[in-house]
Image (cartoon, rainbow, N blue to C red; front, side, top):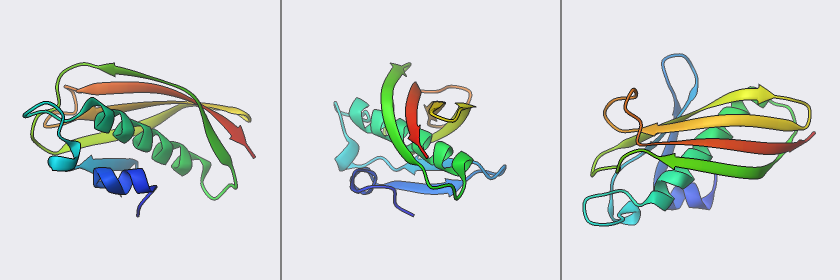
Length: 125
């Protein structure tokens, strides 16, 4: 499943984890290279946005809803190295017009994230 041309450019793959929640994976490669040996921050930010969107889409189910981002805040915690990166989102509030979502990116250990994001979305149902 592909979410957007940008997701395709980053080489993102979408699956589910053991609990059935959306999980996004990005392999390290030339297209996501930042400074030598590290994943570009923009690629990590885009991955977090896609993980949040996938979590929100899963929470909405089959409901016809237009999702528009209001704001995105990203905290970079450590550099992403030359290895596979994972990201998952969690809907923290799903209202009738606004949704709040968090997303976390990690590499080898989910308990040691490389970045996290808080995203707010406007929902048009």
